Length: 234
Image (cartoon, rainbow, N blue to C red; front, side, top):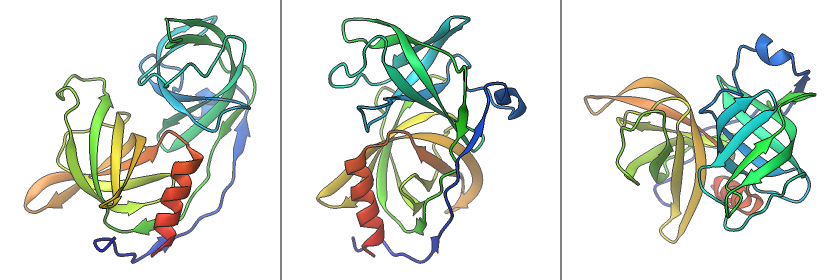
C-alpha cells in the first residue's frame, strides 16, 4: 500500500527453553492466576488458537471460558491441548488434558494444571518499521472503562508476524486483550487477536500518549502467510 514505507528490518534467532513445573515461581510470573487470558489449541488436530480466561484455579484443575466462542465446538473431553500465556515478555506454553466441558457449545472447560515441562517460547521474527492503518476494540479488561464494542483507530509504528507497536492516547493497560483489524490495502483487511504487552510514554502532537506493544494471540496459518507476504512485499 502507498502509505507503508519499509525503513528498517531487525532480525533475531529462534530458541525455545524448557523448565520443570517448579520453575514458574523462579521466573516470577503468575500464569495460573484467575482473570488471566490464555490461548488454547488442540495439540494434534488444530493449527488455530482461541483466547480463553481463567475463571477458577482449584487443586484439581483450571476452569477456562472462551472470550469468543469458536464457530463450532472443536475440543472434547479427554483431548490433549496446548496452552500459552504471556507476561513480562515471557511466552509460556504447556500441555494439558481437558477434564470436563460445560455449556451447550462447550464454552467452558476444566483442564489439568501444568505437571511436567513448561516451555518458554523465545521465537523472534523480523520487525518492519512501517505505517499500517488499524482499528481495535478492547474485548477483555479488568476495568469496565470502555463502551460495548467501542472502536478506536491508530497507525502502526512497526509490525512483525508475531505482533506490532502503535501510538495511542486510549487508556490501555498491560494484559488487556484487543481485537485488531489491519488495513493491509483498501481491499485487504486482516483481523487478529492481540494482548497488550507493555506501554511506553510518548509525546504525539502536543498531547500525552503511549506507544503500545501488542503480541498476537491467535495463530492461524493462512493469516500468518498473508501478513508475512505483505511484510516481505516491500
